[in-house]
Image 1 (cartoon, one colour):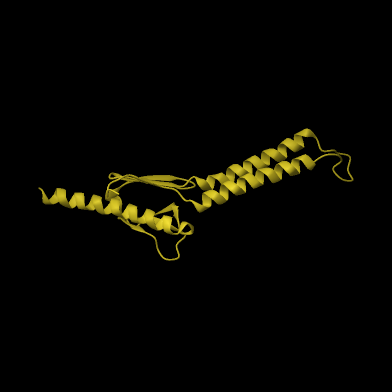
Image 2 (image 1 turned 45 degrees about the vertical axis):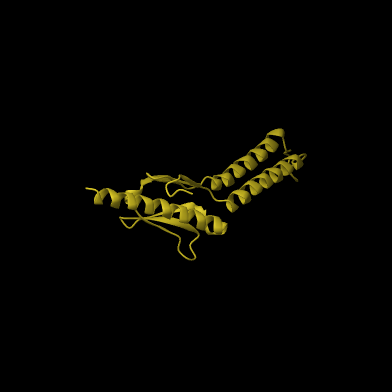
Amino acid sequence: MSETAPVTLRPRRIRLVCWASAATLLVVFSLVATSLTGPTGNGYGTFQRGDQLAMIGLGVLGALGLLLLTRPRVEADALGVRVRNVFGSYALPWEVVRGVRFDRGAPWASLELHDDDLVPMVALQAADKELAVEGVRALRRLHRAHLAALAGGAAGR
């Protein structure tokens, strides 16, 4: 693999869990919706078709909420890194990145910036084990290649 080859990283385990959970949630809410028939208890009301559709709608909203957790992604190339988390995204040139961190016990990797900020990369989760480690190594290779190019350009002047 080239040191400057573009890299795209996504979490694996959380995506599988979220898709399975979303499907299960949708099935459960649909089954509950089909059981909403007849009187509402000791009162005078009865369940209507709208109640069933509302229950299915709640299942769809819940499933979509779970699928938000599959959104994280990291894309990097020779110019910089783009991080998309569950909420929010960042596009950073390599010049502002000091290093790529994956601390022991941390749930995900992060980018350490020169202004001492940390940008979390939720796409590189500890739960993915070796896949996350390989992703961090690929990002570090790209960062080193950029630093080497800067040093080579400065030495050529």
